[in-house]
Image (cartoon, rainbow over the protein chains, first blue to last red):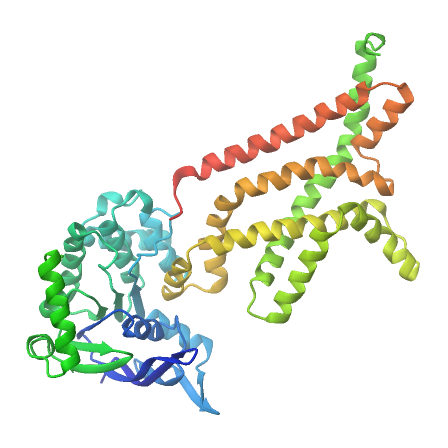
Length: 262
Length: 222
């Protein structure tokens, strides 16, 4: 049984179709990596699953719970608030720009949601947070504030923060794109660590290397459509579609010019 | 005039004006107490996606900021009388007029503060399962406060002095007493003493804001 199913999802910005009939599903423990050029709709897709954007057609099913209850006059009607909230809680999201809360310490950044949303008491929440920080290799930063941390450290905190609400699926939206090249490695290491634990993850990335290394499945998107889908060997190693090949060649040229980021 | 006034007279004057400070401070604190939450509501309403709500607040802010407070005070007190012969307490009228006026100015400050907080934080909090009110009060508001302190200190400092307008509908605050004494004693000294009172008030306000800014200096908003 799939833990996440995206069914024929389309989305428009004004008249422009940014998601065009996108369908895929995800099994528990599976790692899906979505690649594609900027503006191909990858981030929008993640944002739709995380309810940050509304979809115009189709449906999203998380743990057998549908997001769209019915379609009225061609418009999708979203489920009731409590059901949506529950779905939202089973998804954790890591953003490109970390989006840490600057007025809260690293520890508070992680414990805020568990305490307010999951009603954990401070002691439990802090214990869990400290364990997560150890896992991220930044246990000595818990009393500091985000502005004193490097980008790589901030991103690791934001991963810990997403994990603290114990989501079933972790979504990462270009988790290394805002980082200086020398800091990408430390974040990739943490993501690989999570992959080893068999966490269910959907990662949007430009790091083709990461896709090759940890993905069970790779999706290539272009102009709001899924162009190609398969194992990393298939999609990256031996792409069938012309557009995928073009994208990968472009990417490799860039790598040759600028050196490998990781 | 100065040589004619001895220490006792000066002390009496300070005492007299000090008694007027009670009313001045009441106007000041009550305005702050009500105008801040009301200002937050107006700020949120102006940010609202509902066009009617946003439109009404826009008009409100335009009316308040576009007309003098003196006119508003007179309107709030005499308006009900002209319209339906209702009279009520003058002090209450002053508080209503001040709150309506300052809330509009505060609202614009709050709104720019709220809009300056990166949207990504709200989104992150949302994906963590936090509700709108939780996001507002525990994520956005603390940062908004830090952002708006300098602009707020300007408005609050102006409020300390604007309290003197209360006398136009006969609410006797400190400055009204000072003016009376000045003409009664034919002396400029009561006005000077009033000036010192205002300076002290503004000094305290400035210090308080400075302390608050220092206290919130432990983090940077990116």
